[in-house]
Image 1 (cartoon, rainbow, N blue to C red):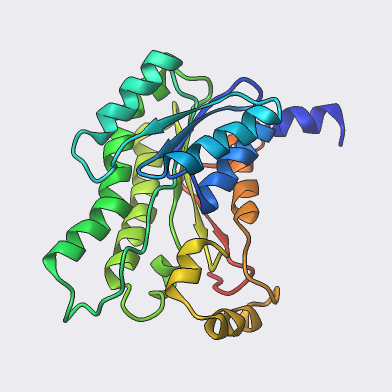
Image 2 (cartoon, one colour):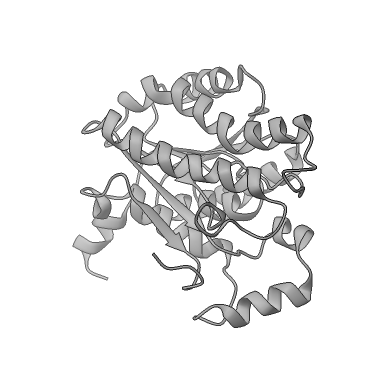
Length: 258
């Protein structure tokens, strides 16, 4: 790769906060951004040990990282994140709103109000609150960028019992386009929409047979890896994507196409 190309994809010295970064896609994104040169704030909720492991991995490879704990379902979570970032860096260049979970499956007819609230809190409201609170710090950043993590479920409805989750991710797509207009030209806003990625979440909510079937139905004949998502986020955060905003990048091996 030429020196010019390395510069285009370099995130050297950029400050990035990744929510839900202790495992799965979030961890891969945090480690990928660090390899590209960014300093990383690793957000987690409960798994302090896993977050510390990510921090150790990044530092061991010569990167810079620290951890932040916050329950994104709490109303003051965005303010907590902003306070941590302000104290540590004073500004923010990259925000990756990755935190989310399927939480549980239930048909709309049977779903409880409590489960509806939890799914929306984790997958939508946390992103709204975090982004709102961190915008002043992003405005102080260098070529700031927001990358939201959506899902293929926003397009195809997902498997049975995930209608609330799919609706929340559909809202993330709409939010991405709306904020791209609202915050331009100062801040770029994009999203990625992973398909079936091999993480703890899919192992918990699917069977091996179901995963094999999905891999067979995918044009690239495999399931996704967390690292597949990290590459797209690095691109969207870099100067190579300087003229891209309001877009959702599909990462599903061709399982769903527009």
